[in-house]
Image (cartoon, rainbow, N blue to C red; front, top):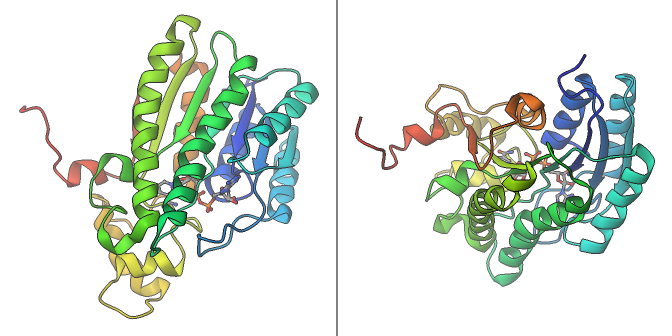
Length: 286
Ligand SMILES: NC(=O)c1ccc[n+]([C@@H]2O[C@H](COP(=O)([O-])OP(=O)(O)OC[C@H]3O[C@@H](n4cnc5c(N)ncnc54)[C@H](O)[C@@H]3O)[C@@H](O)[C@H]2O)c1
């Protein structure tokens, strides 16, 4: 028996990166997957989004694990499209046990309101839309997981002036997620539905590996390369590593989706190689 045998999990942003890693890890442990991805670029976000080919490749990889995956192209900002995609997946797979609201953008180096609003719409409203679409299908024992960021917990990461308006929108969206899971966990506890956030540090995906992010980590260099940024990436963590891998986040997501965490709710689960404690935020004195 796998750790999530027979469960059906809805994952947003499933074409690549962490979303794909979640789909594969959960499938390895016996889950079937419903996945969506935008599969087109967002103009304020400088690096490309996942493609339909990548989404289809995720399906092939899940099917190789002998599990089923139903996918649609849908933008998490589009409430009706998210609901239609999820309802179609549930009609096909028969049930829904968990939501992993993972899709996100990080439009850095921008000015003006559009990037700020886009970040909030995708990174926060998109989470709300996924949860709203899922709620009618969820029953006793279900699990909701939202992907936050260390940026939710530490001031001065992507809400610093150099990150621009999109960085501030990203930070605000992730802070909202932290509050949202806290309060929704309380609201849904009587139904035994759990709600938790996963807060990653740097993860080795496109969101980290792009020119805008290199510029944030190496403001001292004009047009820094990945090699230039690699020297600076470890500054985020207490452990001497540049980033964690998507599979490290998937391990936490698997735990939160599984019944092993049946009484874990309202938690801010950091997978950050000590990034939070390194910043010495205010702690109880012990
Ligand atoms: N990579 C990091 O360093 C890092 C750190 C902290 C938090 N996060 C968070 O992790 C999550 C996953 O990001 P990732 O690292 O896998 O990056 P990624 O860019 O590789 O993957 C994000 C996926 O989400 C999809 N997506 C984006 N906007 C969408 C929309 N409007 N509708 C549907 N799909 C959409 C993209 O097409 C892409 O496939 C995000 O919420 C991100 O904010 C990432």
